[in-house]
Image (cartoon, rainbow, N blue to C red):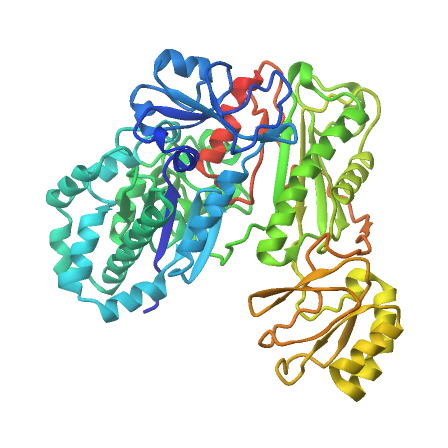
Length: 628
């Protein structure tokens, strides 16, 4: 079958769900996750520490459905939430490095992606709590192996709404802002799913063709994955099933929490007819506002009715994109991206908190470097890859000082340079490179910096066949070269003697008969400290200068598998790269005029798509309440 089936998973009130898994006494009661109070320095507060708060005015990040029913929204701060719902329980996010620490939420998101990848052909992590999955092959398998009449169709009915039902159409007409507050259409519970089934739509199942049957099978896949997420991880999630990511995401947002919606091709026109324009991917911000104002349109169907020629004249180069978007046929395949492309972190400084000196900025760059180093180390241990670039993004808002005007009048600027961290990168390396980026751009005088962002990107896998000389320098190469002839003549024991003659170096010998894809070679490691050897899942401590081990890792022998910090290694160097000037890049922070739209105190994102997830958007919007 040529048709594709795309699933979209959106975790329900994810930050609250993560906190509830950690503290089950939060289950079933009105609660919310809040920012720290940005008016005072943020002391370190570990995730394991007691984090319920009784006072303060931190902005709301995520609100439980119980609290939403009492009128609490993510536009409130803690004080406002207590007035609206006196019994609400408030949990502050962990803090580290002077800012919010979202590590526990991101780790939980990684658990979800790992589970979904069991059955998905491709997994595209869109944000901390949103994942697009290609389930075409799995849907085809279910059609081949399971009964349509007795299994797939009844299972899909029990689990799913149809996008062209009256209930779905009503939910589609709700504004983007109201969807984020939690509108009534989103909050329909399972009995409404049953009513939706009874109301009609499913009686046409006998006439459905191959595409519809494949999507029904896809709905069963999504329902079973959602059930697995709940049973194994303790989280509920909502889902959408369609032919592309755009429609699957739209369907996913129609009915929440813990529900799913199927968007058949024939239902697309009904779904998009009254859909507010800002609910389309990429049109929730400046471009969407410009399209609405220029063309005087408010819904997807109104945009679709604009002739392509007029669209091109008003938005050169974007006409085809806008047209396909409005018709729900944007061709954007699921990208196999379980891993984020970059690690980004940032902080905003408004009003009296603005940074006016280089020293202040370098201090905060050091804090951001500390956080990113921790995340890089965690990513390294999980995925055996390392970043090769660091970038810094600076924003100035409001009535910026004169030096900025002299620098070109930009309110945002970015600088980037290469910084290959390898397996043993340090906080100091990251901070030094970031400061170098910043200082290439500093105009002098009172800076008035309102936002600082930093990102590590350009991830490269650490090659399994790399020799340790890449990490330990020329001395290791020389020892290896000296030891190699002995290995060729006498095997492991002679290698050990040769190594000892070279000053007690530790030698590892790879058996080319069991790892045929790799040449036989010997690698010498300097002696200052022992390191752990990993072979077929076992861990054995190898004392420096005393042992030679023949290793077989089924063709994946890794002569460079030395955990960071266990052996002395030459620090990878950072070399300056080309500047990236102009608009904000990944992780850049928005700067707003003082007294205008309130901006977030802390922004911390893992690589996201054009549309960030609701909860991450809430981090940006809700923290603003504390930064005002």
